[in-house]
Image (cartoon, rainbow, N blue to C red):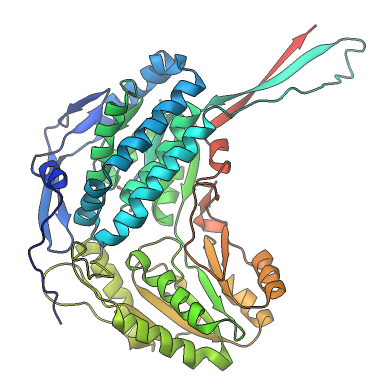
Length: 501
Ligand code: ADP
């Protein structure tokens, strides 16, 4: 089977944007790389080059960090009131909202995801994140603390805390939700008064670069946000190691997260990490099975399984195992796989040739180890990086397809016999990002939610995200939380001030 590609009219602003080589944003100016080098970004639906982008490296990162440093230490940004800061972030949300179609198109072209999804989810969620964080700019408060100081009897003090921005933040983001990940990172940094050097993923730099234009249009002072595209091993590594950076915020693989921690050790910069997952999604026999089957499909196939929280281990209580697998496989077979721009497409291509290779390798290893596909299981031939939505059965808990993050539309369906037997198996992973539970027994659901070692547990739903809901990992799925008020802890630090009266 191949993918038929028909010519589709695309948003004219998006096609204008990709028609020119794209520069990087440093200190409020659009500039070429110091080396003059560029790199291609590809359309995963065709494998063709979409645009050439300035290739940032150590020298560009250094210039960007210096600009962010100046903006933080002495620029007009440092003198803005919280209300003025919040207003700028809100203005950015408004501008982004005015360009939904253009951003959705850039995401689809660069990442491959269906335009219908980018339009309904990626861009509106990014707008909402900026609005939510804009509101926080005026609400980051310290406290007054009545202190006792037993070794100065009779003395009186006035003690209070200030909540201050951590400073210059390096932000390294992945390719699965390019714009949304930029918003998750920039929103809290800007609301708190930090300045930023943002490095988008090399596979998907376009929406972050266009966002950089809107940031300047909104009126952020020069150097507050710098956007430096480039490769992870060069630009990313230079940012993580830079000694003038106060904090690094990273979203990506656990493997690279560990490299970031090493790189950050030089100046002990603060580190927050949102990493991989191998999330258990548990269906009990008393669940509303139609809803659970639809939920299990969306848990793994949404964004082509390229979600760190994908429900990639589907545990099903034995009496309903066959029924759930059958229902899920039927749904998988009905998914229209095609170019993201086609309005009938449910699932687009994987992001890159490398990612396609990785997913296909896992499928081969899984089959060689004895797993069977009840739907899918293969690459789709022809142009572009397409793979079939796949349901695997007959797996064993020790197999790679059950233990390792595939980051593709591949779920292992596994029977279980009781909650007691299930729990250690569900928790038997180095990851701890998310989990799902499907049951009508609300007490059972909450008991299990308390025992699962995961940063998010969804009950009778999956992939529910909100700007106000903290998201992040237990165990090797990360350090700290994104979103909600929790994330602001990671962009601010507390100063205790004590005055003798
Ligand atoms: P994936 O394997 O899914 O591409 P990665 O974790 O490699 O995910 O990439 C996420 C982000 O991390 C990207 O922006 C990438 O460029 C960056 N990155 C990759 N390697 C490094 C590194 N050694 N140091 C810093 N950033 C890196």
